[in-house]
Length: 149
Image (cartoon, rainbow, N blue to C red; front, side):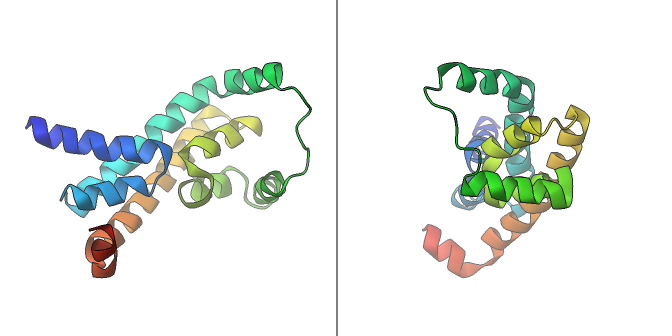
């Protein structure tokens, strides 16, 4: 019982920083792809929850301690604004696991002043969809398993 909980916790923690870490950890720990998907989604949503509530504070700290003004138009900001203008929070949420990472996606949504309810709704849908897809691929594709081992 305790070892199973630790496996779940390991997968969730691996997904808090980089979403693809969860499915890889699930394969290594020999969890089923459904267990891996759920734990990966929970790990991402933990990061989303924390950063949504402290995102404004993090932005304030960056502004306070930044020595020079940030570049207004970097490659990343242009891409984020372009996605925001075309697709809104749905686009940001669905590109968070593969592109923005669970750390940058919620901060980006907070920066665009998206209501918290919308952030949680769309990020959780995105986390489950990506979690199911990536976990299934990681568990069923033999070349991925060979690469991990």
